Length: 371
Image 1 (cartoon, helix red, strand yellow):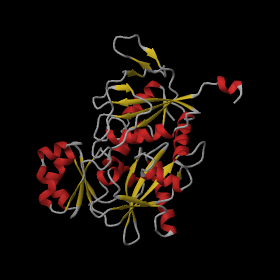
Image 2 (tube, rainbow, N blue to C red; image 1 turned 90 degrees about the horizontal axis):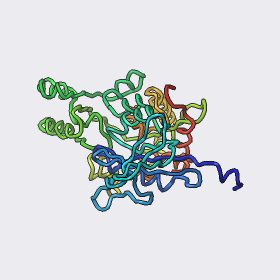
Image 3 (cartoon, one colour; image 1 turned 60 degrees about the vertical axis):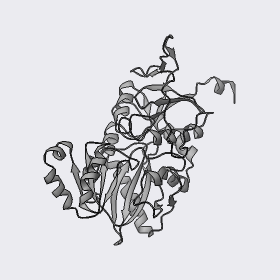
Image 4 (cartoon, one colour; image 1 turned 135 degrees about the horizontal axis):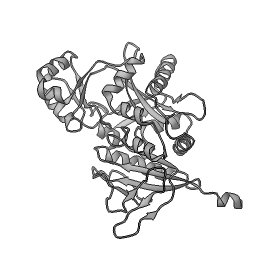
């Protein structure tokens, strides 16, 4: 390395994780993988945790965030409190009883956040206001991607096939429950009941008897007062990742992969995803080549129809009749090295470390503000 290269400041990346929702631990696991993989010869890295109470704190750079037994990791809120001034100013540490200390300019934020108050456009709006570049989709795509009811409406408007569903809004459930139950019964059995604005399979129930429907809705309402009830789709679960590319190149889709879940699980639930080894991913999926190409094209259409940026994962059902039903799009998918989207890209020729670098570089070269 020559003297000029040594004097050039490195890009400063703030990896933000945690948050005030039930996906706090999932966020930490993804952040741990990003912190381990990011190229320290290219980037100065600032790890920032958002505690369950919403406090932003500076966290240790070498901490591992893993599930130990059934104990989920959490951000320790005792670290130095942080503030990100508007206008792209330097990150400031606000430790009690001390003079605020500048931690330097943040060039890119990697918001490794899932669920409400992170993945849903809220932190994206904060970063837009601050004039700071960040990884992933903007405010609108993040908000729509988080809310499954609006997501499905936009996907259907774009001509993409989605399954039958009913939206259960808070007011309707409280004041007109009988009508809501009749609407859901028209879907037939079985149905899946889930929070409209949550992920990682939190609060989801499969209902095979309508006697259990109210209980399933109440469980979902513990996570979100707005609930989605979907008719079960018979078919194999095939997933595809989409990645934005620099310049004017169109987004690209990964090889599709089939999620295989142990028979002890009724569906691809939280335990199958993150605890134990009850899930396998078969990449490429064993489906006809023409179906795979159609699925990849549909994944890119879904990405573009919501105005996504950076990355996404799009989930499909491949039915026994050979059709494809789009289940949902995830604008910030699970992101440990062993999560589905990174595995799909690894099988498509892009390693986890290269994927992290690709996303940071995309964000670094993306303009702030309206685009």
